[in-house]
Image (cartoon, rainbow, N blue to C red; front, side):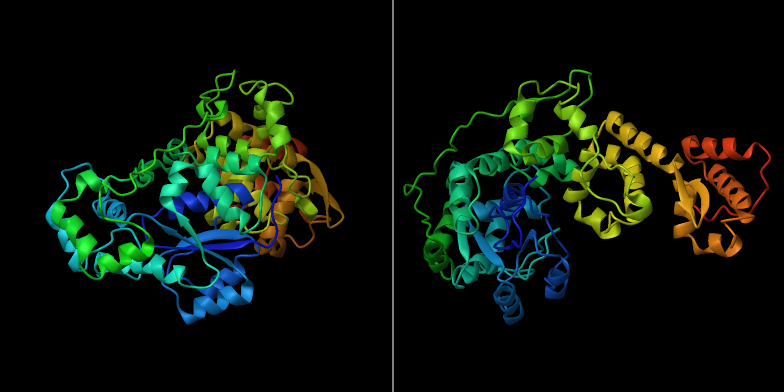
Length: 459
């Protein structure tokens, strides 16, 4: 999956203006990790995030951030949206997206007094709505900032994305179209799980029917709103610039595929994985999307990814779908940061435990990775001149107390070490696939070693 090197993108905007959608679109188009740390924005953490990522924050320009942007030549984008629709969307967010009667009095208070922005970290906390609008306005005034109108993105996402990326780093049309496909509102909502309410329909122009006339008049005539609306390039006259409907586009069959031909369910993250693949490869898979035989998309998902391991872990396979999940989860990468090291083994175990519940993956994908992990664990490897399995070698490498208790693993202590590992694995209820080969190599007469704390392996 091709990438574009050295591209750091900061989306710094007013809330509810399409920040999250644009972040996902750019991540899909440029194959960028979606780096994120809790606000306030910490430039030191941006330095540690690497050379390629996209993130978004609701902050106003400040000297530290501006200096970091100039020094690192980061790309800055700000999104704008009609203030009337932003007000309504922010109201929904504050009320946890509950479908209830619109409280016009609450909307009026939002215009003039501070209010809590539940679940949202922004400098505008406990300030009126005008403080939110100032965010994008101030970034628009900064040299080099690229501005994206939500209405343009909504009406024709391919054209809008192509326009902004032509100013950043041009990408092939097929990658832009793939990014739009993988970031469809239905797909993003299904991936969000309990936070699906965050991804609403995002309609354009609802303010015309839903805002009370006096609220519209405040935005049209009274300071600071009248000037803010004008500077953003919008009008509060319902007759002006009627909203454009979204350009209809053919939905790719992959976005509507429910199951492969063997009955295995298609998880939303697989759809994103499909569109991140090279165009030529997708064309081959498209001939029989539901197929599961050799050369199919299903087969590729379960095949080893070209993600290199190092040393002891060089031969430990990570499937393509497991590698894609790793790329898409910055929280997981933070814990298992180096797939060349023992983190590779630990991430594989995380995938076995969590991929089903957190990623919606069918057991068919988890079990294939489990089988690969067990084959690796039970394969032989030289450890300090003595023969042992990869699993035993992993325990020796990761647990200093093991080596302290069995200093001569190349000689007399080897059998006692393996026996202790067997005891610990059994006590922890580990997958029998780790245990049986060790038992077979030792017979059934193990010593009752007190080593339960060694493994920490719960499969």
